[in-house]
Length: 287
Image (tube, rainbow, N blue to C red; front, side, top):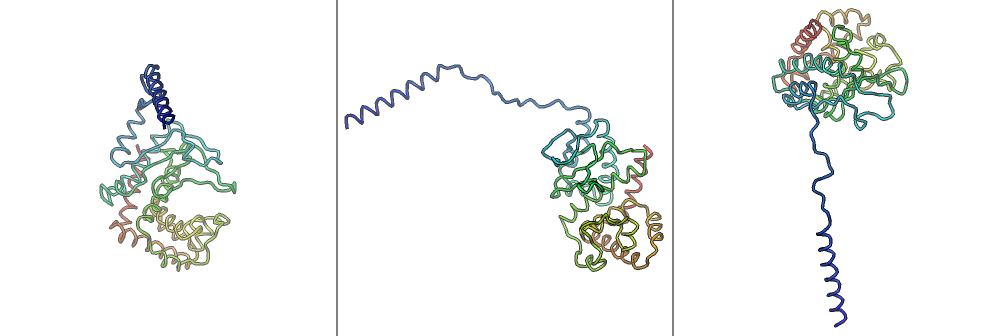
């Protein structure tokens, strides 16, 4: 027992000496971590004013390897291309939905993160490329930002096609469309290789584009997005260009389901949304 007590006393004494010794060592006067906030550029401030503050949408335009596919040859957008691209999205997508769906529509139903990429995202087939990605309804990645020309209707239309398409996916993740009815319209012509035929050939089968043949959800998103890219007269001309009556019938059935979905799920007049998007597209091109 005496030995145990002596041992405890020795251990206690050593511990006290160690504490005293440590207390006399030089202590760090500040953390090694850098908590300094980066200085915001004029572009950062513009993004805050037009995206982050009003809609809680963050925009990533600087390189972040954690939010892009590592096996693709991708790079960040040129700085001077970022704001023009975001102005297109703001005017044609956000403003159109806010006007027709209500000022809080995009605030409530929106991706919380945009990732902008400068280059082309070429797919493994070396034939097609990915223009955009929607990830879980929270993030949308947009590619080819460096190639957007605000003075070209074709360029603006292709770019806004991406956000319109991906946003439909986000809406579908919130409230699903009538998949059962949709599946009955063109049940036999979906393909895991949709680009094996041209858009024109796909349209003769009752699909609005070749990519729409991928599956029901892509078909729905493509149908809604492409209608939003055209004026009424342009879409009427599109129908007139298709020489297969059964295909026109199928496309009109799909259009009707899109219109019904927007009305029933979100109380939105889809044709009014289309007209507003067209008006805002013209505004973008003229300014």
